[in-house]
Length: 287
Image (cartoon, rainbow, N blue to C red):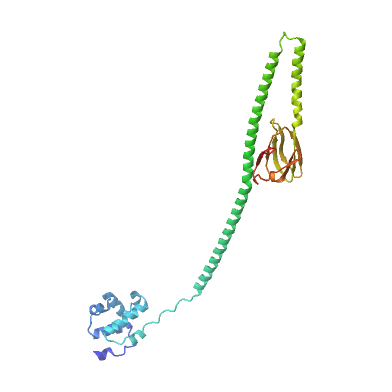
């Protein structure tokens, strides 16, 4: 039996036929040889029928043949030499092409990312610039509306006081002048009434003068103590404005930092007010 197993297999026989012939010469059944190889009977039959593709990769098939020969005490080298050579690996040309395409896609992705970052920075900077410039204007508009409301209320109160004073003066004049008074008394009363506006006119000596020099465009609004609007509007750069009225004056400036102010010839320091905000103050300044 050993002499038969060591014989060189015929070149005209296939690998499967040689394996089957060795098994039959050893009087070993398919079931018997399948158990130590841990293969099914179907796999043994496919191995002997040269159905190698159904058994898996060529490396596994060679392992089955080597174990098969070991169980039958047959030299496996000549039989394995009859197995076809493994297929050549595919050329890496496609992989190189895929690699170049992947590299190009990665480069494009980095370029797009840098573009998005730059775009986000530009949009953020524009939004910040708009917010910084728009906020003071909104505050100025709001403060201007508040100032107008305060001035309107002040004018209404002053108008009411004037009307009440006129009514009181009229009632006093009616009560003091009666038909029983003589001509001298009537004349004295008339002189007193005539002298009253003269006394008020003498107060004009207490008027004050404000002079403003505008180094840049700025909005201004000024009311005197009687609620009269003595200045209002936007003044251009280089404009010098002089107004006169009864102090104290209510002043609102859009850009106080670009305006030089004097009251009755004396400089007024408004540098303490916050920059980029509406300035509301009273002249003369409270100490």
